Image 1: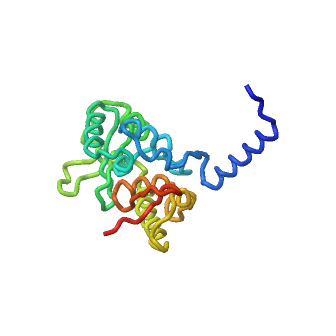
Image 2: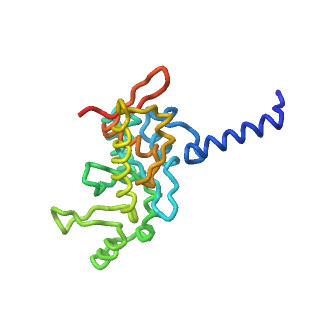
Image 3: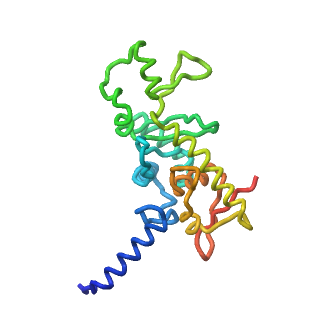
Length: 227
């Protein structure tokens, strides 16, 4: 085995740290390298591991269904596998109150950690409903106040950032000459209006159809989809 000189190793380490600082986090894997998957559960686990660390926000990692659509090209397969995983109690799927058809996916173990009250088990009585609502664990359905949705506690600030981050990225691309940027350059941009990272938003916007990708000799290009 060839020995690597210490000075060379140190130089490479310095460059790696510099690259991490420029990209905004310690995970240097480019989105271009792990944008697509053939298996929904693999995609979920990778995205869970890449969920941004957000100081002062106590929300367990979640994945948007639109992000899965950006990574697993067969949407029917995604829906079918999500339903199977939900029935097998591997995960939960939540309808988000963002004004769009957004759904979040969270592994059941993470959700139980998020909702420590539910981890006690047992049947929830009527007297507990107000406690669960105030804790953000359930929300009333608008069409029927006697029916409830399970919700993700403490997610409100992130949903605001989700909406604002979408607008910020679309606005950024619309200001470009051809409404496009190289993915490698776009990934390095820091968002002002969202604590969720660029990779999180790009997967969402690609999967929801607001952005599209095109392969070029220079790499992957992100473009605003035409109306």
